[in-house]
Length: 386
Image 1: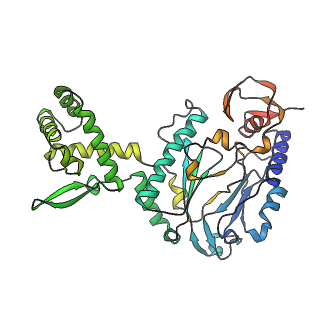
Image 2: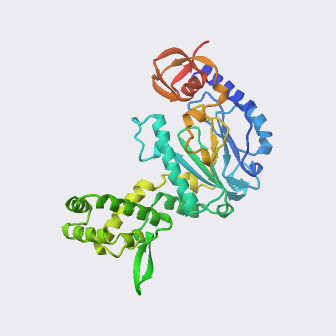
Image 3: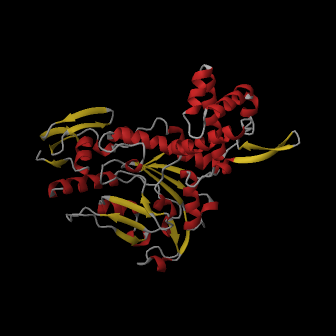
């Protein structure tokens, strides 16, 4: 990044901070703060181990320093400004989840557009929220667009504050479906004086497997007999004999299957269920970034700040607005709207931003400032003279 580009972005970031009201996280004075300044070094330098006492008013600090990135800690400490983690004396931490589009199995880097990557990341976010709402029953959730490639979720329920890394890793393993044994989605019930194995249908991974099974069965029974049995034989461990047994059981026991009874098809149905567990984990897990959740000292982006790699705003999202939220429209800072600037495009190609599509050619061009700031922050343009 050239000096004139860096100076321009730093100045305009400062303008954004002067006109933005911030809502700090709870107990903000007990958290560590950090930021990345605009420097001419090849990499980025993190300035951390700061407290609000060191920084003064958050708004004044941001307007004065005009940082490239701003962070606060998930953890709370007796002395958040101490220069080493040991000296801070940890007290508690929020449970934080990070979804990054670059790390999603569904994203094809180099083929998916930025907009497509973010759309797939929102789908993963919804799966994560399903776990946090329904499986864990957390109440105090804050959803945030990271300003870059994904989303953060902050859980501040009292029940999670004292969890150490190992316990947080168990939560990670659960939402990612790591090591999920098919037997863990089952329970036993007394039916007709006999102990029967049934799927957990009310919640957890059992509910997800059960729903998948019922959908599969509906599709199967919509086929003719030979087609349905051939479909069953496509699955590992199911030959012609088992396919006939399973098909007959599914065809004649719809009510029992709806209730989660998995005894009705014998070994064949269990083979089917074992395969479904793997399918459901692959399709419905939440591929979160494990180190973010397990690290009780993690620094996370400040909502309302700007992301120095996109010039988009790190933004809290009301749960009621999540479906309609479009990061490439709603996270464009108002500071950059209503102006044109000149930039020298060094990485031409298509861009989608603020509801418009642009196909940029290399060289100097006049563009809306929000587009120019986005291109410069992402390394696709330099500031040109006005």
